[in-house]
Length: 33
Image 1 (cartoon, helix red, strand yellow):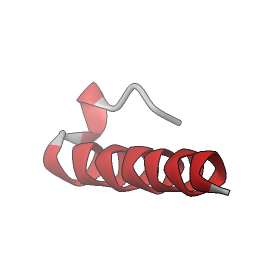
Image 2 (cartoon, helix red, strand yellow; image 1 turned 135 degrees about the vertical axis):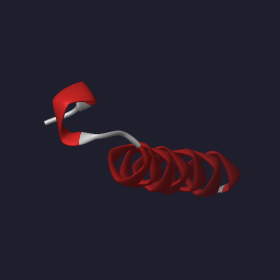
Image 3 (cartoon, helix red, strand yellow; image 1 turned 180 degrees about the horizontal axis):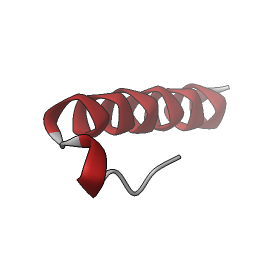
């Protein structure tokens, strides 16, 4: 169970980081679709 929680936490962290990068970067610099 602990491993599942860690994996879910890492996944959510990655999504939040990706969304933050999308908002910070200009449209021309967006690499993540």
